[in-house]
Image 1 (cartoon, rainbow, N blue to C red):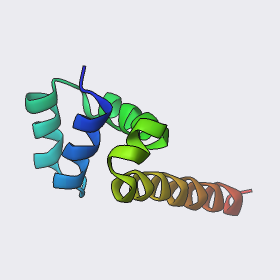
Image 2: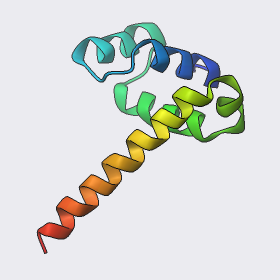
Image 3: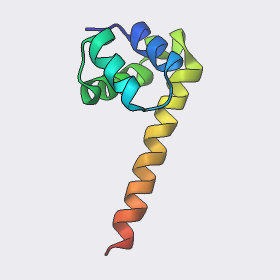
Length: 79
């Protein structure tokens, strides 16, 4: 299981979600991409994550927030 620091360091080095990144997640971290993104968000929201890399932690949180808002707007448009 990767540490908070390892998750944020990996994300800082590979910020864009691509097929190659997903393969690296599997091979280098030993995680499924879905598990990686779940654990990455938890790491970004932790005090330890903010102390290690506040820039990447904020970027991860803002990306998730934007995606949730966009999904909510899309779902709201269908009603």
